[in-house]
Image 1 (tube, rainbow, N blue to C red):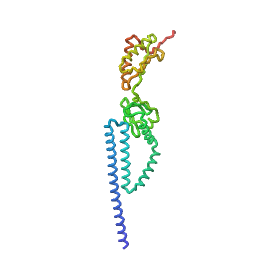
Image 2 (image 1 turned 90 degrees about the vertical axis):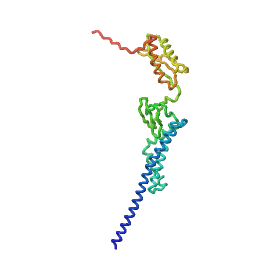
Image 3 (image 1 turned 60 degrees about the horizontal axis):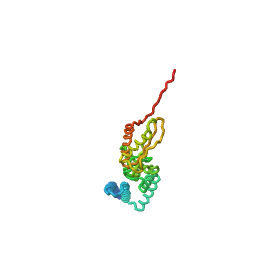
Image 4 (image 1 turned 45 degrees about the vertical axis):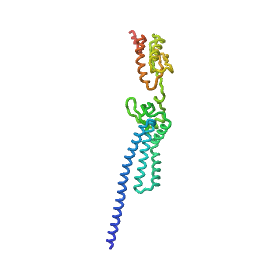
Length: 278
């Protein structure tokens, strides 16, 4: 009789274990499906938002990656909540767990949170935007994207730079694209034997003849330094930001030709060696 009772108890326990296994297997399978679907949906929504916002001409491109990332992370958090709910965890418990986890993660990832805070400040104060050429302590280049954690730059050499937002925000930022005009400063050395006034006139006429040089402020040429082997003349002329490099390169080349044509030499250092008599 006892043996039969024990067998019945074992069967009941086994049946209960099977039921529990089937139940949790179904929950695990559902959780995996939800997790995969949420991950795919988050990526699809993020790309869709980015693609849609990029087609809106009046929308600030700086905000596009941030909004797409916010949507992605929001869907991932919601997916995580649904996964936990599949295992019978109550909503209040989920919120408590997320709060505790968020606090622990916040202490563990203080540097990462600094990047997020710095990214928000960069978006709010707008020291630069997508397409600007900037120089910071984290690097220099054209801004490709301002994300929640880092800013992506493309250097003039075609290199990719991922700069942490906190490093950019904590240092000075030079934005070469913010203002409409830039000043060209071109230094040229002439010989002490040459006519300084004539050299200044030649350089100034060259600048005035360049149509991309602005009339106001007027270009000027002054003596800035008396070197060991040359008198240094500096041309200061203003041009539009987008013409800066082309005008600077062109003036640098043309000044050489103009001075040479005018018979004004551009000296180079000489070293005189005197041999002592034996």
